[in-house]
Image 1 (tube, rainbow, N blue to C red):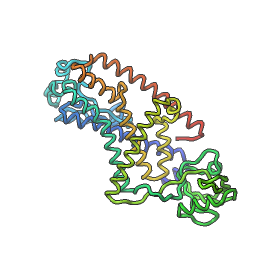
Image 2: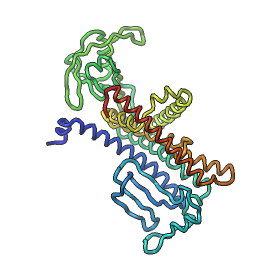
Image 3: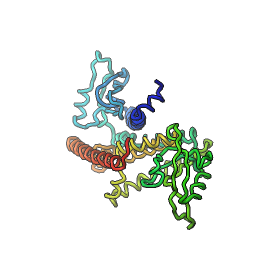
Image 4: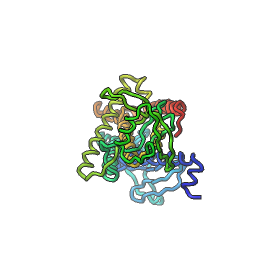
Length: 387
């Protein structure tokens, strides 16, 4: 049985593959975030005890004889971590030196106090902490730039692909889905998105025989466009879906400009969203998505092609960077606040107190994640959707 036939026979496998693609994308973004910490830590002479892809039991491990870093591939390939010498701050510098001075038979170089994260100056520690979120911003720009070069930039022209479908609209009642493509209207082939829009607008209240391509299968449905008033006051027909922009190939310079503009839009949009969360928390929380919600959006975006999907990856990378910069205990921003406090006070905060704050913050963060997950599941159930 071929893979295509298998997916057609077992549709749930298609959903599993979509979730797997999302998890791989999210893991890559998280590992690159941790890679930012790793590179700047090593550049500043801090020992990295473990750099891992995934969580849970270790499947593969290699220990660098030069740096002593354990590179791990773990069972659950979702995210990863970078564990630095002394970053938890639970032991003194002298104790860290004694605990991590390796013996010759271990085959690992001896580690001195200078390898300790806590032994570094506040500026160096701050740069290591900030390197993860900054890496997410760099990754987002690279994704936007490479994606634009490879798949083009959004143009003012529209395609015949179907964007988000308005619930309760004629299109929704006919079974139209995000990512479907209109291939004919009243028996006439349609390849131009502009002509498609014009014909739908010119058919208010009149039945249209619409040919729909869904995952390679074409079917025909009869849809009666709703009668609406257009921006110019004229009566137009509307099926109830958003149009999708065409992607056009561009050169190097235009790709840089498009990536810069899109990057700026995504950063500003995320910052404005956080501002809305502070000013109108109830309304903003209704729009918040966690991993489950992101997986659902990712599943839908995969129907739209690599261009939109890479833009989604860039948006998630930017969101990860901004989120980690927030001054929340257990996040990079929370650790940065303690380092800034040390710079202002002239002495570090008691390590045990800082550790307690981070543990408490982590617990509260988990509660928030559970709330967001519940919100995502409720949205999926109420909209009769699936991942």
